[in-house]
Length: 141
Image (tube, rainbow, N blue to C red):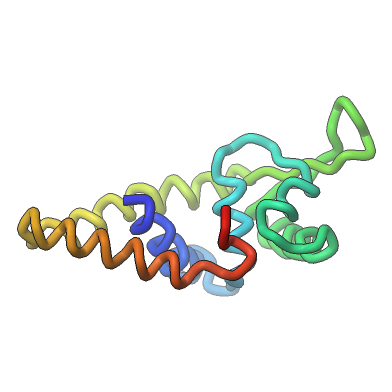
């Protein structure tokens, strides 16, 4: 189901934003950053950049765009003011929660008509597709 979740997020995030905020578009890199921030815990910018496999400047630019869209918040660490932490905003979390509900419904609708054997085959194929669809920066993780 993790494979379905990854693909679903990539497909649905733009669609959901278009429904709620037609003027907001979100790039593939922004989607990847939101997936990394989905835990709800603040993440240091350097850790986010490392997780995304991009330079800090690229991660910063991506976060700048997400902050402008109201999906992510940036703040200085209380322990070390030099450290910048980012986390999903309330709006970003609301959007993610909505995705999780839709995700379960879509996954069930895809798998329900299939036999047990067909479900196994489908999930195996999705695993292969997801691995092939991974950006080079995610491979080996």
